[in-house]
Length: 601
Ligand SMILES: *[C@@H]1O[C@H](CO)[C@@H](O)[C@H](O)[C@H]1NC(C)=O
Ligand SMILES: *[C@@H]1O[C@H](CO)[C@@H](O)[C@H](O)[C@H]1NC(C)=O
Ligand SMILES: *[C@@H]1O[C@H](CO)[C@@H](O)[C@H](O)[C@H]1NC(C)=O
Ligand SMILES: *[C@@H]1O[C@H](CO)[C@@H](O)[C@H](O)[C@H]1NC(C)=O
Ligand SMILES: *[C@@H]1O[C@H](CO)[C@@H](O)[C@H](O)[C@H]1NC(C)=O
Ligand SMILES: *[C@@H]1O[C@H](CO)[C@@H](O)[C@H](O)[C@H]1NC(C)=O
Ligand SMILES: *[C@@H]1O[C@H](CO)[C@@H](O)[C@H](O)[C@H]1NC(C)=O
Ligand SMILES: *[C@@H]1O[C@H](CO)[C@@H](O)[C@H](O)[C@H]1NC(C)=O
Ligand SMILES: *[C@@H]1O[C@H](CO)[C@@H](O)[C@H](O)[C@H]1NC(C)=O
Ligand SMILES: *[C@@H]1O[C@H](CO)[C@@H](O)[C@H](O)[C@H]1NC(C)=O
Ligand SMILES: *[C@@H]1O[C@H](CO)[C@@H](O)[C@H](O)[C@H]1NC(C)=O
Image 1 (tube, rainbow, N blue to C red):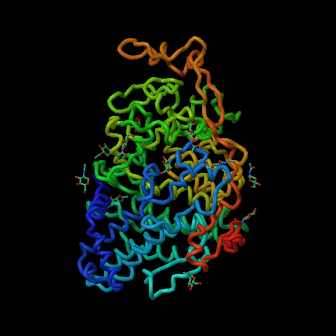
Image 2 (tube, rainbow, N blue to C red):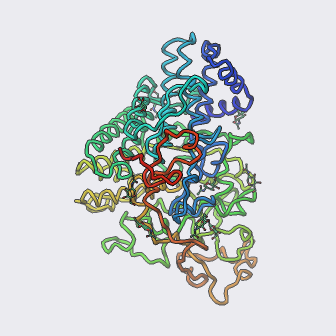
Image 3 (cartoon, rainbow, N blue to C red):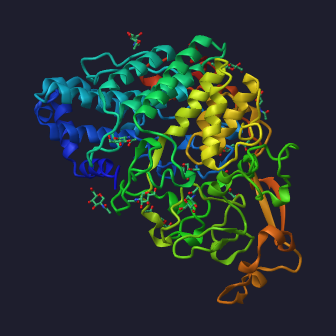
């Protein structure tokens, strides 16, 4: 029962308008009331509210009331359901579709304003200085985090550090350069050195630690060094990112963080003191109160294994399925692999993470009260036919298999935004860019060892030795794709590494499952031995007798056409209309005029 409490408290509070009243009072007088800053409890309630509005939720719960970023959960790894998703993939995105900028109470600037209110008011209260500093440090982290959500989309944005007064202050601000924003985020995060290595009091666990701040600094500086923002490959940016990520890795290691032994349980065990991997996460407790449960299992499991909503969300694409290494860590089809690969038996002898991520036709997938059940996905399958998978696969990643179908709607699994494995791969990527010949391989090796891949004769866990910097970068890109599948990282990584457009002309594919002549739904589902006859099929040796597999684009899917302009989005027109000093991003227009703001500077 570690790490459970903080967000529960927060949300309960925002629910009962206590905070609203406080805020109203602040805004109403124009001068922040010092009253709430005289009492550690009320100040803490306000700080907890800042966590609630800032820490991400599960992508399947993203919406107007939580994060405005649901459009960004698109990649080649899954077939999503958001409408605008296809616009990013098919090259029809308009300047107004990436509207994270100002979107009322869910927009980043609303959150930043609430954070700035604490930062500019708390010193007026009578709480002890040491407590103030600890509270301010957390607010600084949350401010940097919210700015980063904007910077990774648009590049530099106005870096506002105080709650603007609608009448007295100049609202016609201009964009700060990306470089200024990066420095400002880093300066905000540097306040966090006063935070503890970990929070042990129940009720505090889940708060920002000093290590979380170092890890976030490392993540931000990695973006700044990456091709998305560093087209000339300025090595000083890589050196700066390397220093930050090595520091994060060393400090977190010292503070007791590390890889969790069981890859499939990192999120599920996040509240357990044995799981030292989550570094930044959002807690849920599975009660029916809005905000305290998540609906990931409800939407992700097969239709018949939910309370009636699953089946079509987070379906893994064939592209992702194919990308997993073999059991010895080598690429499918690599002649030096101990395992041969064919598309018709694609599920055999894969990286153990494959089985923790992908559910294929005929796989054993114990769910709820039926531990040994097999998952079938043939066309017309009775129990799932009203919402069948759209790709021929389901995602198993982070699904809590012990939960019964009716309880899937009240998920309690934590959303882990940043975990130790990411710090390791961020560090590996920077070290590789700086031509360190050993660290990248060591880091990938540790991650693969945890996954269950053997070291192999050359000790490289399948990635090979003497890789060039370019080859190692590709290995890191693949490792991130596999390790972080369904953790909301792929879209950002494709943009950060500027590899999204390499997918142009390709499709997100599905595995089409057909029944062999003579095999029917009725024969497969005939009663047998208390179950159905299909459950006697062992797909490992007889799949081809019953099913024919082929690969095709997802139904109605267009070829991917990711345009260069999408590496730094345009500011929505309505925002420039309100603030003409806001320069449009290059490669986008405003009122017919070409954008001038260079996001790489
Ligand atoms: C979840 O948190 C809420 C609010 O703190 C609390 O009322 C409820 O009892 C908790 N439920 C569980 C199952 O822990
Ligand atoms: C993406 O976000 C949309 C909108 O909130 C949601 O319906 C969808 O399930 C999400 N997709 C994934 C793959 O998480
Ligand atoms: C691309 O996707 C958008 C949004 O779904 C859709 O309106 C548009 O028709 C698609 N483009 C093409 C060329 O079909
Ligand atoms: C952001 O830009 C404004 C206006 O150019 C400038 O006054 C301010 O110092 C800049 N902020 C940072 C953090 O560089
Ligand atoms: C947190 O603190 C405890 C007690 O000092 C320590 O045993 C543990 O390893 C620390 N780190 C983590 C990540 O829990
Ligand atoms: C990880 O946990 C799963 C589910 O509890 C279990 O089936 C599996 O054996 C565990 N794997 C390891 C390596 O401990
Ligand atoms: C925490 O995890 C350990 C295994 O690592 C397990 O034995 C224990 O039951 C778990 N505790 C809780 C409260 O889930
Ligand atoms: C779970 O899915 C059911 C069926 O679609 C839906 O009615 C319900 O609102 C979902 N539950 C939650 C908590 O989102
Ligand atoms: C997902 O697949 C279904 C069925 O193939 C399709 O109708 C839907 O448009 C797809 N969604 C996206 C976002 O591509
Ligand atoms: C892909 O990207 C290139 C530039 O990187 C662009 O010119 C092209 O139109 C894009 N679309 C396709 C389908 O290739
Ligand atoms: C603008 O587009 C061109 C290609 O059309 C591309 O080379 C350039 O990198 C883009 N600039 C930015 C800042 O995205």
